Image (cartoon, rainbow, N blue to C red; front, side, top):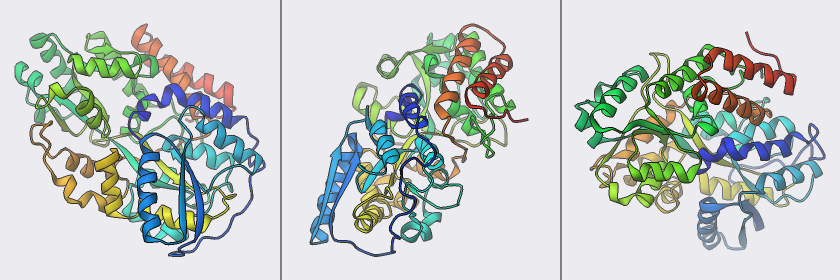
Length: 437
């Protein structure tokens, strides 16, 4: 979901603290009803969601009811602030959860680790469609047993938004920018010519370091669950942020509102951000229409991807669901249907993780805001290239430590390797996990 990606580091900690207080498996059911492919259910289901996701489910729920007589889809907007507390309590107690819940991508592996049998096996319903979904989202919804339990919904595919007028004023050809080093050099030219910084970042929330890490196929942990926040990839990403700060190329904006205001004010030339930033720009800064374009992210080297991920969500069916078969059929109706996925992009701004839907006519349309560019085609092309990384139940602990490391290196000038080594040691001390290497 849009906006949530930017807030994940700030608010994810609260949710995961609640989760980490639960014993492994807790009181959650150890098994649930086996789902059937194309097994249309009857009766009523209740779904928990929030924001535009709840709006989309309500709209499609009404359509589903018309096409499937004898069914009722109840969508409850539980709000975001307490959502994960409610979900964690229900999993721990083994009761109290609805038939389906919304989960953001970065929470999937924490729940799968703590409650490995707390969610229904979705393989009978979606298993044959694995190749049709964003591979990163599919991987994060799959447990260590290889079973899909959180179905991909929307993707947070990242591109580089840039001010075409600033590049033109500085005589910089955007297509000539291949690497992050190239972009830093371009940023120096742009600042000299226009007085504007290269990019805006919330350094108090980690400066999007995790985004730069994932672009390199790395995360805070490896596939063994060992700590990798001080890996060479991480040091390279933090060194990039430090270099930009030392050259005066970063506008530090604390929080969502400050980041949006910075874009409206035209502080910076580029914004590395997810596809949902399109809606933010169009809604919050309509006066900048015609001054933006979107392209791939610059790369660190030939081994890094031209994109990353920030945000996105999925749907899961708790093992304690009272009507799991109807929930599964409605899930497939929402997520594995090109028309419905396309409609959620058009009406609610949810960029599909279901790849066939990206071939719909809507995604071929040029955008007036972006000077006639087919911006959604750019993100459609990038989505299958998002690198998969490992998330753990200690994600929030790592996020806090990394955020401190970003502050130490970028704001206070500490050596990036030392700052990240200190972060790794802090995580190891707090979690008992081993530092990789």
